[in-house]
Image (cartoon, rainbow, N blue to C red; front, side):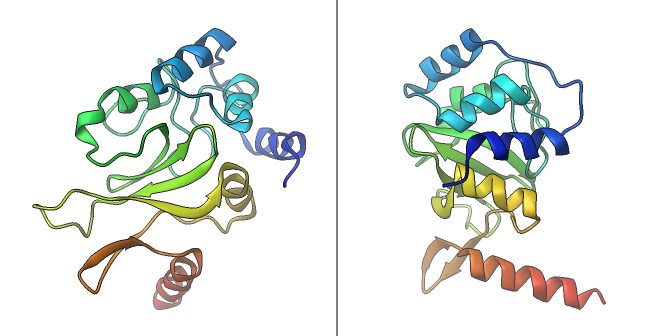
Length: 180
């Protein structure tokens, strides 16, 4: 396991100053909303780094009043709009928006990471949430070392599934070499 203090230090070094702060009451309200405690690392990110706007994708989504996606929704708003996310597993919290309607979520309190990518889904199908091969700690560590890629949903043999880390990395290397 990656020590939280070292990981938080590396995130703070990479993050701009001046992020809005949250209180332990703000975090407790979000945990009440989701019905489960946040993973310790997520709680510490909000309390010690800021209310979103840093990290993977277009930035960690904030709690109420914090960093938002391109539709102006913070993580609390996304959680409250449960009906717009059919099949959303219980106790998952929106972490970040990657663009093109792709999101990463974290399961509370386990810290497992889920992806949501509607781009290959037929209009009559619900967009499936899919578990990725990350925990919150390994997801953030991959962001810090530059190896984290957005979630990617595949349609294979008549079924949807999330791409593995290796498949995503292979596709990324292939598209990078296409531009050379």
